[in-house]
Length: 126
Image 1 (cartoon, rainbow, N blue to C red):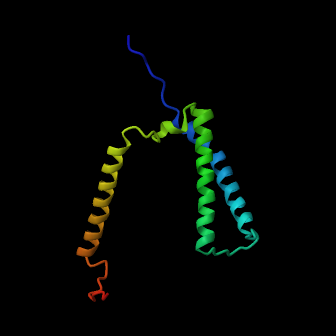
Image 2: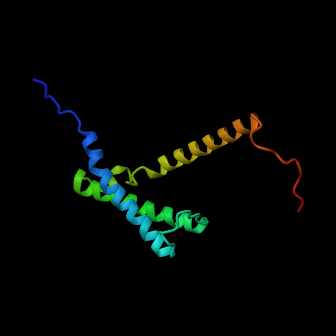
Image 3: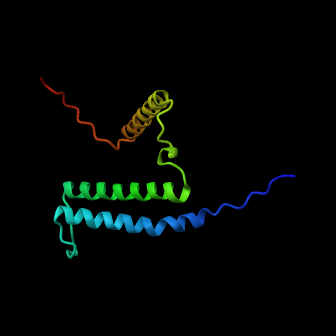
């Protein structure tokens, strides 16, 4: 007799994480703006590079926090079980780095071949 599996309730799990996700990311943005001394009443705020990077880093910390909380108390798995173990890291790290370099070089060569990257023909003098 074969065991009948229950259908996956992936959509319900998405609904479980959406509200905390919005809350934590919004809270981290507010915290970033307060930390940087930015007024939240400005309608047309254009951050400089430092402010934009700081706000994005705060948002990243909010995302990591909500995923870690979700993994720990809802999924009942460790955060490391998402692929952060360092077993066989040297081989996979080397292969990943080489594949990344190949993909970037291939993209660059394609853009160069289709004349999408301007090439300056002068030589550097030392």
